[in-house]
Image (cartoon, one colour):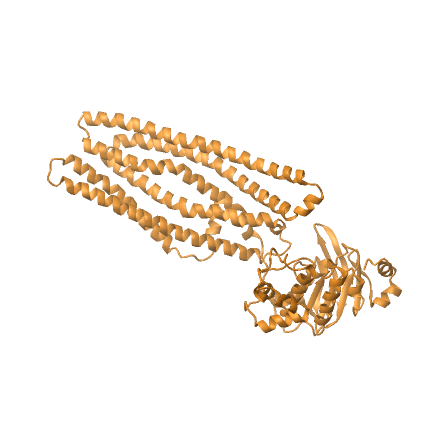
Length: 571
């Protein structure tokens, strides 16, 4: 029952108008009624073949069929309009929820698989809503209405027909249940396949460097083999289902012809009534034969909805609650007795430090000591197991999360250019969605990037190829610093901002950083001495604790490990 509840939960997302859906159902009902009335005209034409009015009945039947076709077309179109609108809304709302998930949410650990689910699984649901549901509605109405008319014409033949259909539906339901299970497994494996392909192609240089072409081929082959097995299982079921339905239909026809012939020969039924009966039977045969496929598709939608519904089960960050924050750089930031663990491994252990307002602070130490975790705690991506972070005397958890992050600028060593042009990168995340060009050029000037951007073909609107591959590493780094500056942060977090740069480029970026550090609190994580030696305070972090702090000269005298790191140029 879980998957059915999952699909219902997805359909309840948003506030899509039901007008198109209701209108589609109304048109489907009209279409079915017109189709059911049309054979009566045929019956009257045959039974009154010698009457002068016989052609009126034939024209009446033709008009009913024409109007039925128009009503059915309208029903399918309006159903598609509703389905497309609904699925777009589902995709938008699910992604809106994804970006509000805490960064340590389990579902975010496999981003490619999550992306595959948002695209592929929602597409399965779209097809079901746009095609399957309208077909089911009109099909079931046709079958129900057809059976009523069949009962009126000949209850004897209809009882036999009803028993046959009941048996057929029972078989279809059993086969569909198996299809649903296979579909769910196939969707999971398809996401795994997409994840593998994306991971291997994005790291193709490393694959080649490790001579790993064969290993990559093997990984992908194993995944495609599983997909093949699922496809074969599904094909077996479909191969069984369609012939089963068709054979059953033919058997029903044989029985109807036999009973109908007997009733006509015994004058219990007119030839016109028998032909009309057969027309009704033909009318319900089409939805009957497609009923199995429709239920199959619906079960596939149920299976596809499971992983999408998982997104709804994860708690999201609350960006609306909390106290106001006017300024962040007038009081010290105090980390008091912080303990934090990740996957049961202690990363920080009773760590304490104080960062004065408008100071330039550096965090150094061995890799894995907990420096980046401190940034995650300051950004409030994660919550400490114990201890507090305070702004002055106020616990930062009591401050509105959105306002808190708006006061913080963050620059990492990784290429995180979000946007397709220079302008889009700079203004990404701004609520206004735009800024005066003078502000953008001023930020670029501060990081010594104005001339480089001015030389691009379309300047600020120049496209960035594949995450900025048409820019150098130093230019990308300075562009990310400019993006942080535009937000006028009062706290600037620099996470190895120059780690991947060569010496000459580091000098250029370093000059840009010196300009932007004025008038704000700056915390830098770095392993290069040139980056941190001028800091007001340096905290040496190792094994999740602060083992020493002071200026560069003070630590050289008082902290042997720091002195050794400097001597070996580890920092």
